[in-house]
Image 1: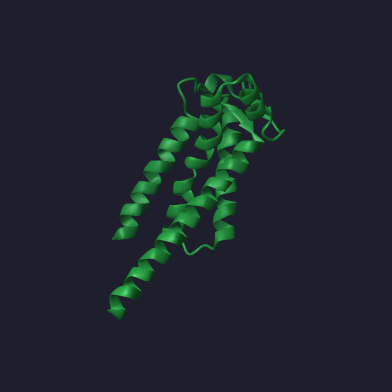
Image 2: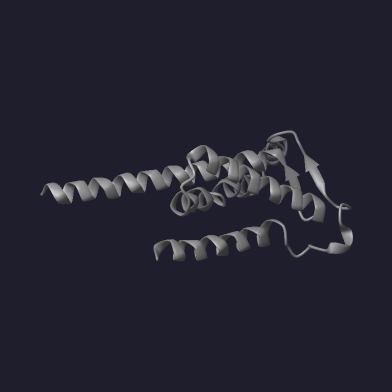
Amino acid sequence: MRKKYISVIFITWLIILFRITVFRSNFNLNHLFLNGKLNLIPFIELQRILVKGDLWQFIYLFIGNIIWFIPFGFMMRILTKLNKLKIAICALILSFLIELMQFIFGTGISELDDLILNTLGALIGMMIYHWIALLIAQRKQNHLSQ
């Protein structure tokens, strides 16, 4: 039953993720492959933003790319029996799919650093899951030993 709820949350998260990253207000099928931008130099745009002094945009892009993928790593540990490496690869593939769709539909800048930061977010999500699982196991152990 718990997995059912987590699955609904996971699907909702995916819908929201694609809405904010790909299917934005500027989404238009009439401009396929016309407006896409590609940046294959990791962190160059973030450096430019930081040098420009736009700290809030830097935080939004840097931290945001990490935070938006934390739920992926966390929920994939609950929903699947995949090991950590396979979940990280799935996060990388999902991130690549988003970046590819942004390029095709011209709804964002496809950047290599997004792949890196999104995958890092998924790894953090897996670590959070692991820490929570350890805390629960420790509490159960303490409860049984009393």
